[in-house]
Image 1 (cartoon, rainbow, N blue to C red):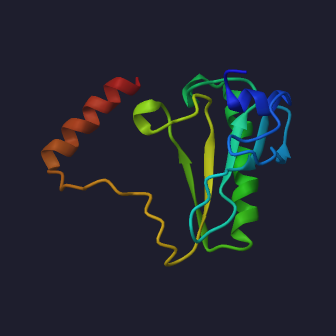
Image 2 (cartoon, rainbow, N blue to C red):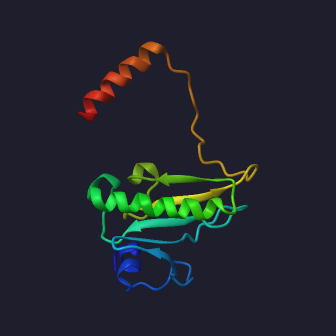
Length: 144
């Protein structure tokens, strides 16, 4: 099977790449969640949520399934917040955004103060008012 996550969704793949068994956390008609084998050092519960059907990019998922995916993420967030101070909700959409498995998947990462997880690591630079306005207009044209 070419796609790891399609294998999990179909039941044909029963193990993660490291040999751990695949175990579902929650399943809906169109979505599935399970623990990631990539766990942040100080936290537990890094969860992946996928559409059962193969969609490489978030924007390719039909609106109804995308809404179900987000509602599934809400349930995972609520569960993690019972034991943690917060969580990050991440989507690596495309290879340039570090999407390693080419099947759209959402990450829900539990967070607590001083957990030393560094998600936002890009260097920031100040933006002039002129640049901000130009970029806003440019983005509006791309969106419409």
